[in-house]
Image (cartoon, rainbow, N blue to C red; front, side, top):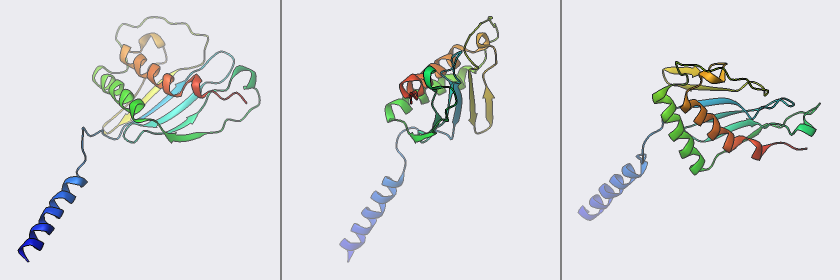
Length: 156
């Protein structure tokens, strides 16, 4: 009987330990970005949950296919390596902010670019002028573009 109680106690401890999350916890953070714009076709956009890696993507259309086409929304989950990289870049943005004080004038032939972050107790977006984005905001945008940009472009 004592052996059965000991076995049940060890099983309960192991079960409780298995239920505890491992590694650093990521708060619920959502990132929305207008990505991969150009002067001919509308850019794509992505909504990403940094806690789970789940995303909803409107991919950019290729130049020859961008007139009169509808875009199929892509749903999925990014790889763990991509998620870790984006979490790391987000951590830098959360420390530095999305804006910089000393703005520079930037002229772009592409469409609008934007990054919007929503986290518990915080919501913010990049300024309209690209020259006012912080270096960290540019890094997050570039990382998002690597994951969701032209490699996922719709060419049909």
